[in-house]
Image (cartoon, rainbow, N blue to C red; front, side, top):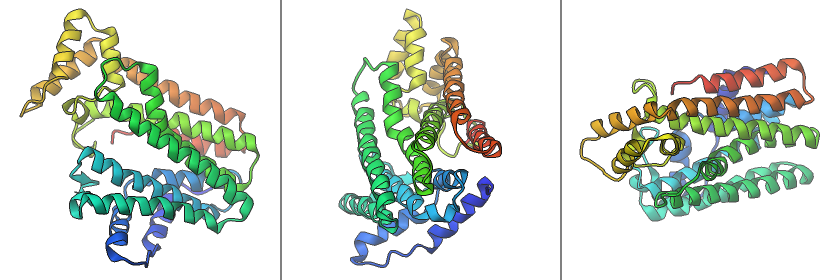
Length: 324
């Protein structure tokens, strides 16, 4: 097994060497641009790691890992259009650098390109990868739609919110790991267990992202702290605060999430105070631990060496101790 940094280096070198030499230029240049911006590339790293967990050279999983990352970036282009976001990873978003139509079309092309990477595998593996990919891609779309729907709803439940983040974020993490297992041709039970590991870790990751958005260190978080509060997003923190709040706190929180002041400093501070006072922040941290432990429980059922279980557990622990 390699270290996490080794996998990251393999993925980085691989993407640096990828050449999409096709025309028309205005279709493919935005694709090369978004892929060149890098980012954490957590998902392709997980695909490579999963393949080696099941005793196959990680480079055999590079094509599947590429498909996962290309799909992820396709979804980011379209998400940025829907959110009218000006920046992605500190750079202009595709629709800002070019235009909305180019963003839509280049994103569409990336979805097709992602499928094409599976063609590098023999038919049996190709079918399994394509089936999982189609299921996952549709779930990501469903999660995104729920996220949009929740913006205008006042009756979102915790279970609905958890289902939304499962589909929007966690299923792709689970699928990235299962693809490595499929390439390694391990047992169906092992493949399903590593999917569950990734799924629960993905939910914990998103809950932690919600928490850090409010309580992260501005110097290390990498994006604006309080962004979800500014945008009046009904995150797990918000929903739990509304569940636990006294009448006066509930009224104040509802008011704060209905306004968009020019200077959000006081609004962010007031909301965070309510999150702490109601116990919502503590309960969110408990939920992060709960889903992380759920992920670790699946490792005990997996038929792999103890040192490989330990590597996966270490990866999960590092992910959950981040402050960025």
